[in-house]
Image 1 (tube, rainbow, N blue to C red):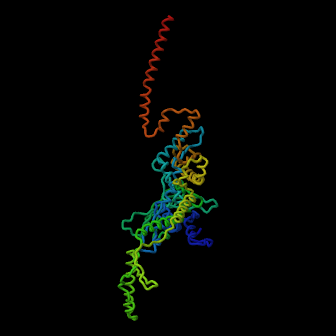
Image 2 (cartoon, rainbow, N blue to C red):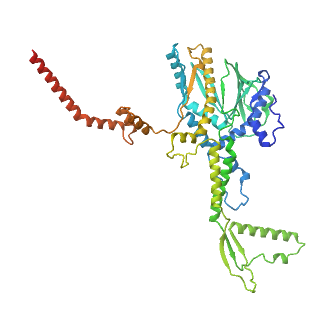
Image 3 (cartoon, helix red, strand yellow):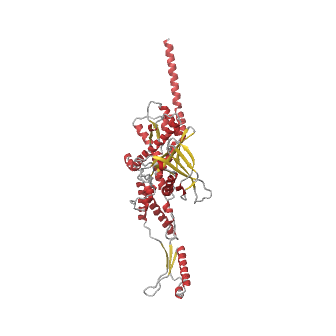
Length: 516
């Protein structure tokens, strides 16, 4: 499959660019020579990596459109505020926290064959790799870039799971009807002290089912990698140890579809800020007879003296520039119909601003960004109102539906990760008793809950809770202090109970003596 061919059905440059940026690489394994892999690397470096870096910039709040040189205002003497809003970060963090903010519950199907040993093996792998934090980062990558990568390898007598950056890692799939991964590629930039952009050395790594290769430092920026690379290290493998997670079938991030709306919102807010600053420096207009040092200079000039005319034009332009810099216009008064001079005056002028219209436009953009990214606007006054549970679920319907799709895709990737762990354990003859297909992943929505109201409802229904449990909901009070206070309150009761028990014992003793 030629990766540089273009499809005539793509009508615009933007569509062709997106087509290449989202392309799934496919090839026959037998054709993946160093030269062919070099072509894939160059395509990823030039066609896919820029989009991924752009998404990362938006996530960091460095919105490329508003910060580009072409976004400079035409009026170079006016304010040039450029406001970037981190909507991308809000979208990614919200969807990630909603789905995996509460740790994923990883368990094994119940059976009677070494169930305890299976749980111990699974817990050991998870604890050694800190999977709660690791899986959160992978899910965030999937949400941000539309893809994420995990590397599983054996170190010592245990398996390690690490995250690889999507900006320099990609997968090549087979040409089958149902493509399967056949090679993973990563190119890692080496440190350059002199910052020579014409030669940035990269180490190229490739993984297949049976072999790992690492190259000597190779140039990529100047295009020499298309001629292949020299392999410096080769290691035998038992399985392809890289897993790619897909956010959706298009491998698009959660804020990909609203970048244009974010750009429009940035531009509108920047224009508002520029207007506010320019209003503080409103242009002063003075109407009256003011001497113009250049008045009549055109009449006195020789029409054939081009050098003088050019100099005069330059001086006039400098005068106009100085007037604009000082935000002041000097205008002469006119003559009335009666032949009298008009009144001299001075005031400020500035552009008219449709406050209501502009604010309505920005609010519409703000709502559209949240709506089309399926991210609830928690700042909405109506969002936290006393709505019923069903009404609140409808408000969250978009994020809930999206989360189900994302979780299914993520679980598929996690299953592949544990499948690699199993393959590495069996290759090392480890005491592995798990079948990775029996591992289940359960997600818990990370939503605020009113535990106090829930407890009150249960108590009203007749449920009983120990004081130690209820003490947790006491605001601003240490539970240990509550226990000490309760012990002091119970001291008289305990003393009375002890006295009553002593009297009962004595009465019982006297009764026994009378019987004798």
